[in-house]
Length: 470
Image (cartoon, rainbow, N blue to C red; front, side, top):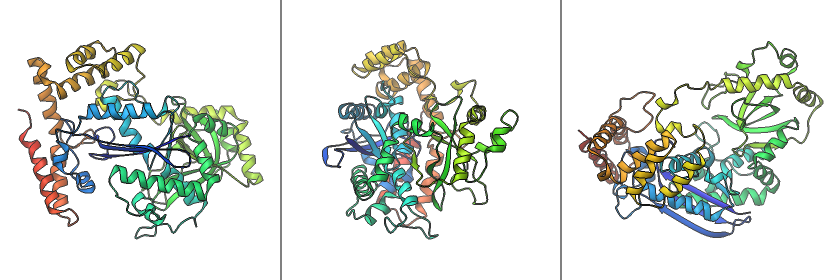
């Protein structure tokens, strides 16, 4: 088994509307011995305004964002894809990577027309998250370390706080390579000192293994983070897959409810309120849901239970013996996310999961990666998938605007102007000039940003205002 530990530094916190600026990865053997390491940086894409807060935190100089010696984002994503392909099969591992870095990679592959959006899950690759493992350790082994806490006494499971407590010195936080080295150290400590829990969690990276455990209907512990107090362990059992997403399962909390009443009235009992998910930050008086939805393909912290009392075992068997109830759960899970009849109105970035690519389109995308921009323009026009054609035209506008017709150039300038000057609203998920200027003013009110860097950020945001297309 090989581990591919990796991390990204990005222009902001939105996987869909920000971009990676740095990718670092270290390939190790199963004992965490280093085999190879890589590090790439790129310059900023033409349409993206970086978050001033992100620049202040990472210390990335705006001059580096436009350094002509760095590859474009398109070239950068091709380099990352090549590494993933060359290192396969490997366990792609990070710290909070499944919730963030993985999503950034997917968007980077999608928006730059890489054929394999799910590269870290194909060719024998699997995914694992050290933060998930750490949350499980916090619940199961509270004396494992002297856990760092915030001013309210709640645990701070942040890499820059955890790694030093575990003995990792010289952590270069907010640098991708530094974070990778720290993540390997934390993983090694857990695996060495708690091999049983590490091994059990590692098996959960395999979806088939998770399904096999769930479908025995035996009580298990599901560990998740729901609030500021820290991760919580729910003792429950599987109660059905979503009718529209086979990767989403329902987990019945056997400690808070007896399923007898619900299963006995499976035909007419409204179970939809049972699957409403509590959000991080909700006040403690909000009751947790009886049925917790979770993704079986995201390496969940699903652990065995040493001692199961008779009542808990009885409750789990009731669910196992009532398939009609599980069917109702499947429908209730799916109904949480009603389908949008017109997906084309959503931003292109939000259409990433609107179906798989045809074999013909995947072949064209592979060719797209190997040819020049004039040929890419031709290939983009031949793609069957509308969103891929639109992304192809966007890439041509970014990297070879001289190939556009006068009408296409006008359309591109209009789109860019609307993108940068979009009004603040829930639908405007990306960084706009208005948001960037507000962020700059917030940074001016702090004394944590080095003055020289702050002035560079101010000037860089101002450069966008000077370049707004007319």
